[in-house]
Length: 374
Image (tube, rainbow, N blue to C red; front, top):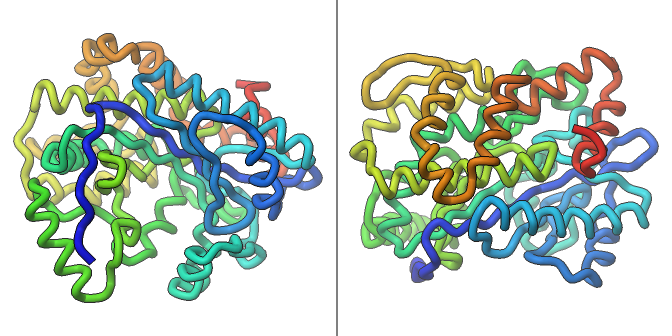
């Protein structure tokens, strides 16, 4: 199987995908209600789409093509309102968060679709443990070579995206000590991690041909990389974010990625190198484990600073790009949270320390997703 052609898309356009938890309103455990929810949503006219995911207690919403932060927020709001109306008819709740804090993975059921059953046969119990919830952000690229250059440039900021979006401190009723425990589950899959360091589509095609000859890979969907090209859309897809607790933050995170992308394209602040990846896994782990207070190692200078410090400095550099893109409100939202609780993982922990009841935490996560509380 050969690598498909890379579609042309408008540079810096956005697409946002959010995987959501479906919970019952009795004890706020996960509810196997995806098929019923999707049946009701099929009658609703929305921008983008709503689709099933691996297990039947989760769904994925996706926007259409978005020009900017305001567009992404408007589309996400319209989809959310339709979803909430349908969920209310089924007496189920919807919420964000990278993991459900106390669900038992062994009780999950694979969604009845051929691809999901194939993946379940291949990956065994890992498929049910993949009941985790992430945000994916697509960035439009004018061509395939430009997409690969942007992909490797954005890799330097992967730790930012993880730390800001982290919302998965609890797994099966236990505080893991991580801000993003979700990504530990992703790392269990083969072909996860980072993309190979190639900067032209011709070289990427040679890599892809080698992989398909092994029989390990049949399409781009088989790569679970942190960032991967999506040739059918003409985008690169950033895949490391936990699903935030609000759509406002989801739109803000997408805008932050858009601003970083414009900064990289317009200013070319550093030369790309395979050596950039020497500290990649370390920075990634620090963001997962400690959130914004994790250590960041600058891949060019070797300087150590906190992710909080590096994000603040980056936001200052991004200001003119945010203004040009209409994304200043997005950066202000993220900066305000950065100086407050830091991220959603800390908010969840703080709430649990007060309530001492994880079902109550999930109930309040549902309220936050619905926009009822902040």
